[in-house]
Amino acid sequence: MEETLKNISTCYSILFSVFLSVLLYLSLKKCFLKEGQSRGKLFFRTLLTNPIPVYYILVFSTAVMAGVVIMFFKVVKGEDPNMIVALSEDKPIIYLPSILLSTILFVFMMILFARSIGKKMKVPNLSLVTYVYLIFSVVFILSEGGTFKETDGSLVFFYSVGIAKTTVLFIATLLIYLLVIRALSELTDRKREINWKLFVISPSVFIPVYTVVDYVSYMYGGEKVYIASQFFSTVILFLFIWAFYIIIKNINATNEAIDARETIKTLSVEVMEALAHTIDAKDKYTNGHSIRVAKYSRMIAEKMGLDAGTCENIYYMGLLHDIGKIGVSNEIINKPSRLTEAEYDIIKTHPGIGYNILFEIKSNPALAIGAHWHHERYDGKGYPDGIAGEDIPLEARIIAVADSYDAMTSNRSYRNYLPQEKVREEIEKNIGTQFDPEAAKCMLAIMEEDREYRLHE
Ligand SMILES: [Fe+2]
Image (cartoon, rainbow, N blue to C red; front, side, top):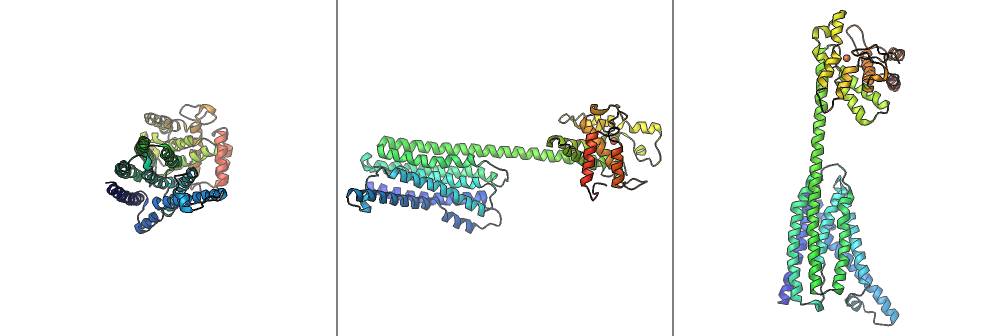
């Protein structure tokens, strides 16, 4: 009976080790193997870095080191320095540091191996490869733990518990693969940074702690302590699986939300740019005017040191600043001869129309600011409200400078764009009258940097 159980238990353990190794390979393949990368190479690398032989080699070498230390003390005391006797003695206290050392080295090597494989496979998040190695190492260490003294109970009991435990670990490994690894494979392609502490700390701390607890329960335990330590370690493993499954699921959900938000943002910007083109298409002389004004406005805002969000919003305001022209007839906008006073009065309605259109965008009512006040002048002689100085919103003062700059640097039916020197003179002349001094000075600084005069239509 005892012999049969021992044989079943041994075969079962070997089978489990093979199963674990295969699932480690499959997990790495599922999560990290990209198109064009060789499966054969990955298989070979997993064989070389497999936790099971690495662990045995480390445990064996540290045990030999411990044996050497014991032999040394025996020689000092004048006792028989036989290596076999030294190793087979019932776990002297020297084994605890040696076991601890071997497991810490084991964790360290797993992290090292995982990082090297991750680099070879060009994985964006190395901590995720490390995590896969560590979580399989945790299962393997649990399958290894639970040494049992013959004096603690019957071997039939020991082997039966061992077989039951391996069965549970088979299920746990399968669950890791089906739940955790499957969720992880959705995450691994992302370039987004994931904090390594989240995935690497808990399994790497667990392995040495478990080894010590296992050793202590071996030294002082009986059947009950043995059962308790096996039971609690298995519960902790299932908690691990559950916690990581939830964490990875949550990261995936957050990633999807971020992607959805980015898609909506891109769509909004593209819709605004399409609208800008629509506005410009009404006027055959101002092709691309709104996009350029938006661009120049953002450059001025950046030069003024405004924060990134404000600069971005000024770009959008610039795109839509002339949207009110939709309400002005094409005949007036495209009239080749001089406008009458009545026609000019109609042109002057476009800021108000634009304001009414954009104010309806409740998620960003500030968009209306640029449309409403971009024809105001710093000295108060502009339209529609004739406000002056700081009463004009900053965004509108910036757009006013950009709008005039583009008017001077674009081709018209009756002239080509003006030379840079002439534009500079015009802006300098109107600082404090037409233009906000700071915005105008920033525009001049931008022109100063634009030595080859690229900023024109
Ligand atoms: Fe305008």
